[in-house]
Image 1 (cartoon, rainbow over the protein chains, first blue to last red):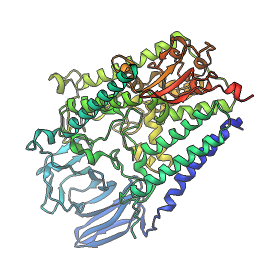
Image 2 (cartoon, one colour):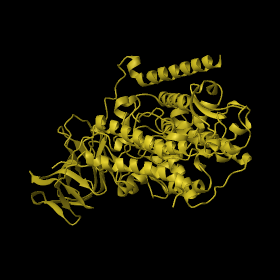
Image 3 (cartoon, chains in turn brown, red):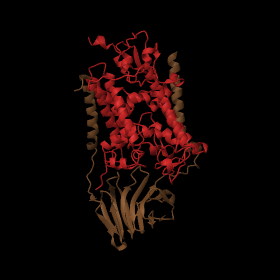
Image 4 (tube, helix red, strand yellow):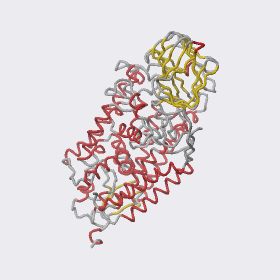
Length: 217
Length: 408
């Protein structure tokens, strides 16, 4: 039992906690339908002699096989946090997906990690609409070996990554960056944050000094 | 089908402000003990500050379900990142331990930024999913400028009233008090030494960053494996493992990350697996070194009030910009003493959580010192009217009251 002087503090804490807990219910969250899958579930592509498994449990809103490509919508694995779309096909190889991370609203990268058995071909598409180039992508083998574009993988115009002839733990990452080239901008736009902060600190010092001098008199 | 909710800032922020104001009024009305009023108000503000610092978890519209696990990278849902663009994509620096690693923070710990902008982002523009268009030196200037401005305006009250890790330690103190255990104290000499150690700690870790970033800064690689490697530059060698050395030992990192795991804002399975090596060596989110330090600091904070604040390097920086000349002369938030009204009873010294002594030792006037967090505990416990007061721009915010006589 806390001493009496702590009880108001507890009441205050309780109000805040209650507010935080109630807040979600004030702002409604809709229920959703999902398809759950287990590591034992196989998504096979019979015509290409390929199959896809997931290393861990997960769920998706839909999983459809079209043109020998599995299209997963709203896919999330239990070791990840956000849902995303993935189109994947595998030719003459069996793959086990270990990680999938979608590009959330503010996320700047998305990736797929899988273990490939058999030196076949894997075709991966994250559903990116904007134009990308190979510099925005990274493909690694066994997490340590960086594969150069054109050697082991290549990027198609529709942002599909084709990985060929690789066996092992493969990671395909796409990075989303803003336009890095702002060297053409005027100086004040290139350094607007620093200049703004410079103004803020100058004004702060001047006002604080003014107050200090004024109150000393 | 889709689980979408848009938590508009126009709903969440006013609601938050209303809850905080009602709570503050409620607690001030309910607290009858005059020696606890400021502490109770401070507790409310500390909790409100934690909610504000991690408001990205509930603020939208971010097209994600409320309180569902958010994006896996630290920057996801960081307010201000997009606003500041690629000149300063890590968000506004504010001198509290608003850890970089958990989701949904609205401001960023300056210690992380200072280290990261020395190594590996001194002149390397890519990494951690972001792109920097400005140099490391410019970014460091922005961080220092923001911290200096905050320190000049608020002083170390940010530590006493706003820091999430300060709240954690205050909760530990309340737990100890509820168990009716008495706190331990350092000798005055050791207390001063601890205060000085903060500056050594920050110097050591910044020096480590400079050593790691020596290739970019001086053109000589002093430690092998520190040249940025991999397509982003942060994937290979030592760069991918020890980027921000202080964060590997900071107790706030595991506390924030594990707290978010506990409320479902991050997934522990994700946090624990994203490591560059075995968890006990290095983890992107938490390492066993972090956890060991957190456990040690927790035990010490149970015994010694606000133990971490006595050695906190961020507190050292804030203290530097608010209590050392020439900044001391223009600092706006101060603790002031009226020597005529002080009887040297020493109660202020005894209740100070960080064992600051200037309000007792010094004759009068501005008695703010670098160890003082402006928590105002000394003001509320001082029984001599007007002997101690906290001021902002020379306007009195709180003043000691003669609570002994009034209670009779």
